[in-house]
Amino acid sequence: MSYVDEVIASVIEKNPAEPEFIQAVKEVLETIRPVVDANEEKYRKLAILERLTNPDRQIKFRVSWVDDAGQVQVNTGYRVQFNNAIGPYKGGLRFHPSVHMGIIKFLGFEQIFKNSLTTLPIGGAKGGSDFDPKGKSDREVMAFCQSFMNELYKYVGADIDVPAGDIGVGGREVGYLFGHFKRLTNSYEGWITGKGLSYGGSLVRTQATGYGLLYLTEELLKYNGIELAGKTCLVSGSGNVATYAMEKATQLGAKVLTCSDSNGWVYDPDGIDVEAIKEIKEVNRARLTEYKKYRPNSEYHEGRGVWGVKADIALPCATQNDIQLEDAKALVANGILAVCEGANMPTTLEATEYLMANGIIVAPSKAANAGGVATSALEMSQNSERLSWSAEEVDAKLQGIMKNITKAIVEASDKYGMHGNYVAGANIAGFEKVVDAMLAQGVV
Ligand code: NDP
Image (cartoon, rainbow, N blue to C red; front, top):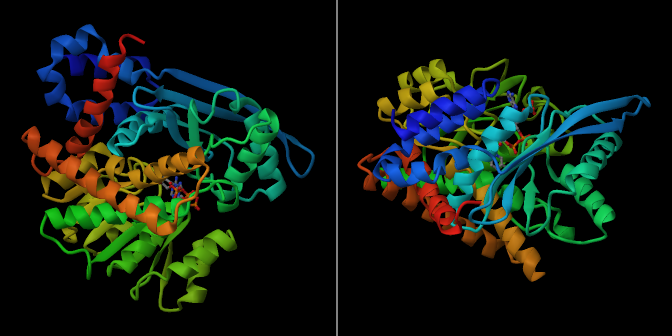
């Protein structure tokens, strides 16, 4: 059995209750096979793949807090510190009822390669809780965040592990987490990113993942001789990534036809009004059913349906496994040109294979949504310097990083004879740097 197959089999055996983690490991290991095969003896002896697929540390803790009715609630908190070969651990915190150890492990594993692709010195981690901020009062969210920090503060720090936001963790949550860390440690350090501008945040961080997705999409389409301007786009989600992806797509001359939340989706033939989405989601914390009040020509549908609409480019920006095989078939039948992933692992393995087999450009999340963590790393640099850069400076750096990532994934796929396979390109480019650092640092 090849080394890659041996390690995949062992990951399946050891993590039976973690299908998302197994899916992520399979996707990476299958695509880096040519690199591993070329170094099989050395990597096997040094157990490189076992060390990569077993986190450095998995932390799981109880989070008790009191709700507005005086009832004590109990949630579970997680932090998985996966690999710090190239820099301090870095990766977001997700607050969503679907969170369990397998989800955090899949996200932490992906983060290793994504962070490596940014070319910045950051390792891979992820964390979160099964707490659902939806429908909670600000006081309840604060009580939860403070209790969560009572444990998490022991494991994080500006040079150790630097979390950020993710699903369910936006500016409000980051503020409460930061405030309580400061109180517990009596220190003012940049241990989390996505902070408010008045206390160490970076300009453009809020927009960075969505903007970065569009910078990469535009660049990758150019490599394929396609113009983004004038194209129609399908977006799923209506959170942080989706909102700023829609904003930048519109600024670059594309028209966004759809967006969604976990209850339903909106179709607007005139192009989604991003300011309306911001007011509904960011200000009123309401549902997409409200959108029709702003745009009477639009349609609201319950349930799923975004991927059945005819358009040129799909930008999944909600959550994992959002595009399934049936959706991929509908997209191909409707003549889609590219699927560029804003969310983490939004396309199932079968759907990705189907899209690629039909000649669709697939920009994998590791590369396509790396603008968020890259700008987080720029926030870390500004915190270390005790300086703030202008929006123009950060945005220019973000654009440069996304262009470099595009070039890296194109070149890596070509180098190993897999022209146009950007999934493989991203995994290989990310893997090579991490392994180089692991080899240099010995058995740790
Ligand atoms: P938000 O919480 O701001 O938004 C998430 C959006 O997706 C919401 O519209 C939400 O709908 C929808 N959604 C979440 N879970 C589900 C579900 N199970 N089914 C259907 N819809 C769902 O999160 P972000 O925008 O920050 O994150 C979106 C994706 O991007 C995630 O995969 C995240 O890991 C990834 N990402 C985020 C980065 C960032 O900087 N924020 C960086 C890199 C990746 P509802 O409001 O109904 O819950």
